[in-house]
Image (tube, rainbow, N blue to C red; front, side, top):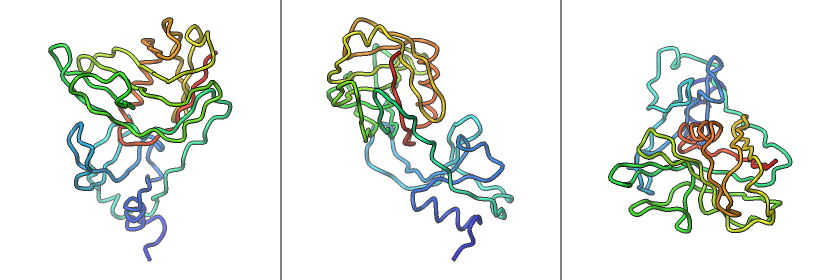
Length: 223
């Protein structure tokens, strides 16, 4: 059996679906995981390989250093504690899709269903689980960052089936995810479609972009 903390032990954990890091890395941002090579919009898994996020949260194929090979300081990535008292919360495996839009190429990150704000030629993406709500929300059809063209922030959109708070759109939304809270501000006069264009929304969008393939817990509170 591989010694705990050794690279063979760490690789076993990764291939069991867990995430690992070394003691000197900037965890939880900087860590390793198993992923699959696939084309954008293709839901089929391809060949498995290990990728590593850097200190900024950007992913690339892992290229082990000599120090990585000899190290005995590997650890499992600990899950962030879930916040309490959420009006709406869920776990989301973040997805993405590119598509042609208005003569150019646009891209979404987050979660999209066929019932959501899906564009012509766009595929569904993301996996949402463990939805809980104290405001009457039964399902979510869209929660995504929209860039058009790619690299230009447009908005964060949340679409729900229903909710029982008539003044929700006039209140400021705070979203807590991955240990940080983002203030998205208020939105337009719709009771089930919430569009946000604030600096906080852009920052939340960056989190979505940096975590494609990861599962994060999201907590929503309108105040």
